[in-house]
Each structure stands twice: as structure tokens, then as C-alpha cells.
Image 1 (spheres, rainbow, N blue to C red):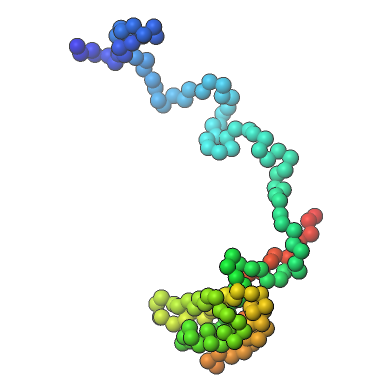
Image 2: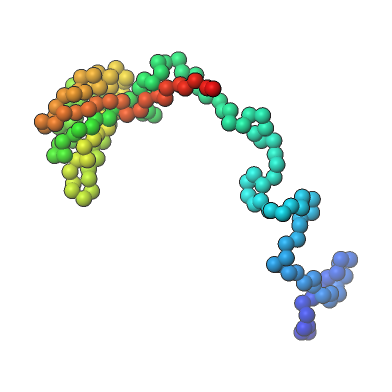
Length: 165
């Protein structure tokens, strides 16, 4: 059996009858049930009013710092020191030997320039303890390696607390 108009085989009672399907114009916007009619439709997260941030807008919990403000901060694995002013022809062994006298080096990153193959001029050195890293910062800052003056400092520092207005 071939029909010229779209039909459905069941009506609302469940009996098998051929009934014309409702034509839908998809270009026409039809408001959903229970929705507030408005001129502008907002999609996605935050489209409806909720009390998620009511009364606490912009106020978040923070950890109290018992340590000194603005001092070094521990990374996830250890205490990281950044060394700048590293000579472009320096090898990893040169940097390792210079800094190993201050403690056991856990990790050393000496980044190379892809185009030239030379050292970019900085290195990250990770120590297990804060004392070893502090000794390296104090002992190697201003020293020279391959006739180039090094600048050694903490890679991560705690933010200084600002007074709220």
C-alpha cells in the first residue's frame, strides 16, 4: 500500500489506523513547556537562574601560609632551582658537576634550541631537600661556568599576600 501523505500506523488509543502525521516546521521556534518566554534564548551552562553562587560570589577557600611570605615553594617532587646564563656550548655533565657538590640532584633539565642544537641558556635543577637547593642558590648565584656568569634562583615561589580592600 502506497500513500501520498506521511501517515502513522497507530492512533492515540493504540488501534491500528492510518492517520496523517503532524507536519512540523523546523524553522519556527516553539517554546518548551514550562519555559519562560523571553526575547533572547540562552543555551548551555548558566542559562537558567540557580543559587549556585548566591552570597559567595568570588569568595573561595584558601590555605593559610604559616611559612614566610614570598619564599620558595616546593614542587610536587622536590625543590626546583632555575639557572640562567648557562653557556650555549655547556654540556649536561658540566652543569651537573657544578651543582652536585651542594646535594644529590634528583633531576636536571638542560633545554636545547631545536634549530641550532645549542643550549637555550637556562637549566632546571631539582633537589630532594630544601637545604640542598638553598645551598645551591646561595653558593652558585653569581659564579661562572665556562666563563659565563650564572644567575641562580628558586623556580617556584609563594605569592606574597595582598591586603584585601
